[in-house]
Image 1 (cartoon, rainbow, N blue to C red):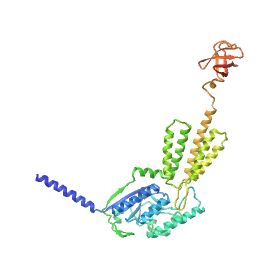
Image 2: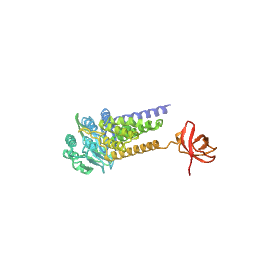
Image 3: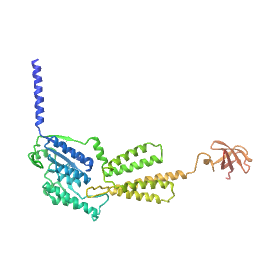
Image 4: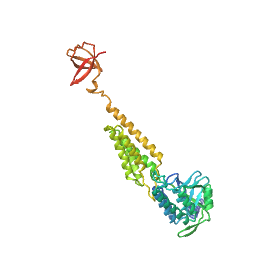
Length: 431
């Protein structure tokens, strides 16, 4: 009994020791933005993670970043939260081969500590509108001036190189991690997370509430990931994915309405359209672009009903192309880009589908009837009795009552001229 009590006591002491150690061990939180665009979903994830790190009184929040860019409006939301954060923020451009491109530049220089892994890059922050690449365009110039000033102010606040922050926007300059360290764009270069934690230990972060010394050398790293809902929403919030979903939804619904009862195309088309509309409500959509795409669909459908000699088809292709180019709008605070290659590829594919569907429909309409009374006209049969003027004939294995203006002998070949009720008007076939 004593041995058992002693054993229980030791277990209790062990548990208490581990709990107390865990409670005193410094804590670091970590999130990852891997290869995805900066959009409302990823912005919400980063902002919520900052709030959670503040609530948990963590030593810092590390944001592992690898992004090709994204929406400027979402980037602004993230930067605002980062500049006002009450917990030290570390943006770690990782892994090797990754980069902080476009919107990623603003997020990186807004951190208290900006770190890059070997083999990464940062830069190319010029704002790009939907299909607009002409830098002489007035709207592009306004967006560029505004965004350059915005990035310069962030760099000045964090004590980084403001000239380069502005140059990354105006000249789309991109540099390696070594160059970024030399130009005072980042603070450190670290190959992995362990070395980063060791390097951050003892460093001082300047918050609005005061200076904070980091203790990260033996800290527990708590990783947070997007839930499945956020991951799906993050994926479809990509403008290119939303555009493709919209087109697939239109195709599915067109196929269902043109072939009632197919069910599957209608179900898939409805799902795609709902997902597309969810994504589009988070993006700066131009109503004219949507209307042009829908108008193109109407023109394709009308081509079946109206003989336009291809004019409606050409109009549909032009309307779909223009609608795709105009689908997203760009302002100084919102920039969305659809690759021209994607627009052309999708437009050509959708147009080819509609043209093929229309050709098959026209072919079916113009095809000779092969069933019913109309289907027997011009068919060849054989007289099974003498016909003068009436008798019987056999066509396709069926016996019909027939009438002819000329005498026809039994076993002679005949051809059908007309059908009057259930009687065939025939004549002798001339070989």
